[in-house]
Image 1 (cartoon, one colour):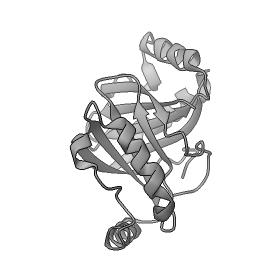
Image 2 (cartoon, helix red, strand yellow; image 1 turned 30 degrees about the vertical axis):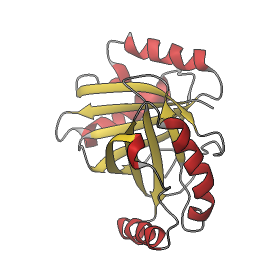
Image 3 (cartoon, helix red, strand yellow; image 1 turned 45 degrees about the vertical axis):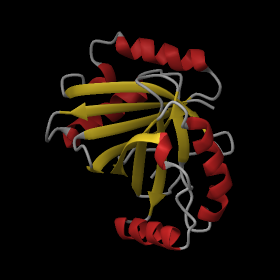
Image 4 (cartoon, one colour; image 1 turned 180 degrees about the vertical axis):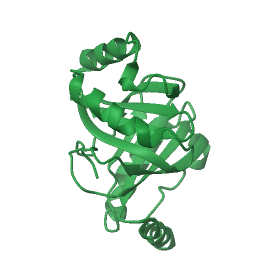
Length: 205
């Protein structure tokens, strides 16, 4: 399974007006990937939209979409409002199921780590060993690592019913020793956490 994670940073106070245009563009543009999520930043770098698309095992289709979008005069239908854009391919951890449309949130925590060169393999192993205990409290939408772009980034996305629910579950997981996986500090160079809410047309709510 391959995913594309696109980040669109817009001019301040333009997101509400941009979303209907983005929805219209997504519905009218014949991209090869399946839209799985469209989320708007609530906490973190504001005026940011995340788009997540799935490509199965078809790397050529993902790259073809990247090339097509890059060549457009008005990418995503909101080129005039966009101040920054990244489009990167990600590979999910092999033991995680594929993402399916559904209601999981509506609060999505997106955690992004820049990995040290040696960090990916032990991180995958740590997740595989530790995640079964963590699943007693909540389930991640995805854990995946970048295969394009600057350096190796590890992104994991966790849906929660509310911000209070997120705090309660994370606190309980830490107090019970269920999470995070141990031995991770030397594997990470940077860490950030952001909270997103789904757009009305997002397949994941």
